Image (cartoon, rainbow, N blue to C red; front, side, top):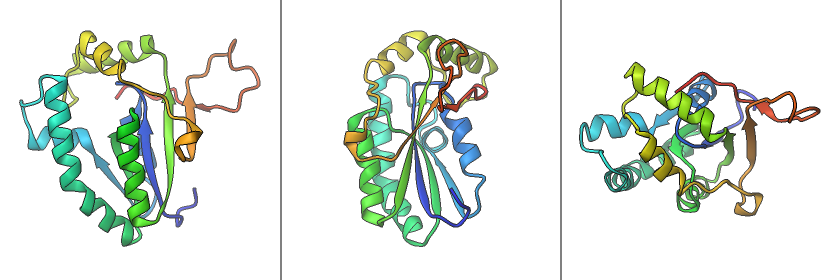
Length: 182
């Protein structure tokens, strides 16, 4: 992406796949704003998100409040990195609707990281205590059960980031996503 091409970046990947780390990298481009769901949820609902139902309720409220603001920023010509999960069809439909409303292009970054790597990163992240939310292995499994990888049929410009594995990726053109833990 050139520094003057307006784009909305979406992130799809399991918990601790590296979405927030990639989001910060993408947001370093000129005229690009990072909007992080975890940041806003942590600020608006401290201590209130203990279950998946809590998250769904709070996330829905946040999306409703943020949607007109995000579309307004896009219409003003800013690029935006939306560090909101694009992990289900419904989540991606909402994100695609933002692009349609603002008439801007998008990139869906799919971080294709194995569960065992995500769990290792999650354990490190939980031990560090620096993330807004602590996620148990049980909640990781629950949230992951709803995960649906994106497909071209959904109408997204998908960029797949995958961990490099020399034996499996010989000759591959996948982007390396050996991101540090997020």
